[in-house]
Amino acid sequence: MMKKSSSSSNRDDLYHVLHKVPQGDSPYVKAKHAQLVEKNPEAAIVLFWKAINAGDRVDSALKDMAVVMKQLNRSEEAIEAIKSFRSRCSKQAQESLDNVLIDLYKKCGKVDEQIELIKRKLRLIYQGEIFNGKPTKTARSHGKKFQVSVKQETSRLLGNLGWAYMQKPNYLTAEVVYKKAQMIDPDANKACNLGLCLVKQGRFDDAESVLGDVLQGKIPGSEDIKARNRARELLMELKTFQPPLELSDIMGLDDDDFFNGIELLMKEWAPVRSKRLPIFEEISSFRDQLAC
Image 1 (cartoon, rainbow, N blue to C red):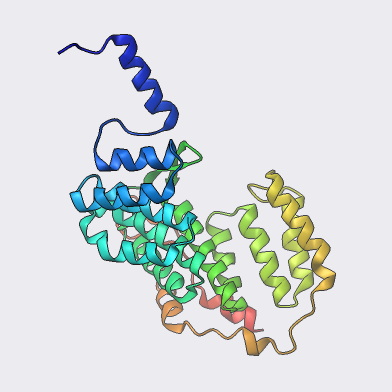
Image 2 (image 1 turned 30 degrees about the vertical axis):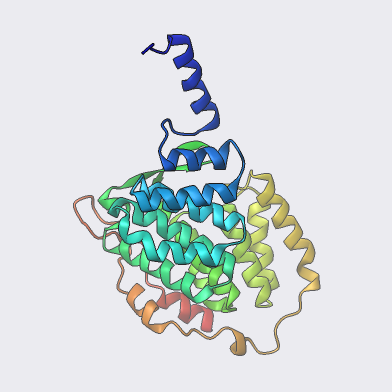
């Protein structure tokens, strides 16, 4: 049997690098080829199923299949697939699967499920169990790898939680959560969401102040053109919004158990030796201020 020449081998390696597909002939490799090279998502899903049933890279196969299903507007099916087969995945894969589930719940409008899952992930942070006990994790976006700290992940999750409460709509709770997220790791996108939240409450002056900070570059990420454009659009739309007739009708806090638990969290970041990570200051003070 003739061996492949080095030039042929190099071409194969370059092919896999360019198309971002793994090497081999397993069901998972075929699924990635169908997804990324052939651009055939339906065929990819069939092959991902084969990979899962064959025990071939189940962690990646289940997550990738759910993402493809979401792209095909089959999010409900993706949710059921993750719930049914995540027990076959490693402990290290559970966090990524939770993140996919959050996106799927958002896509399907399953707000209560989304809120409950985000709260569970926040509790894991408090218990020191996120990132498998490590202070950072490697994330990927648009093909680029970068490090995410526990602090950044906490703020990101709180931002997602704030947006979920906006859909309820429970604007007062959303405001509390957004402000906490901004205290931990501020960014312009969450500032715009907080501004919208304040607009929905008819608090136009407060909204204008928050959005103005984005345009003045006072918040990290303010240089992002999308964030700046969104802040401008919201400021332009301020005059078209009308304050609600009765704020108490739409902004009641109905999550006392959760917030009572948050009140137990510490005010400062814990020393390295501590397993528990204090991610919040007491939220009760926010609620008292907002009620005034």
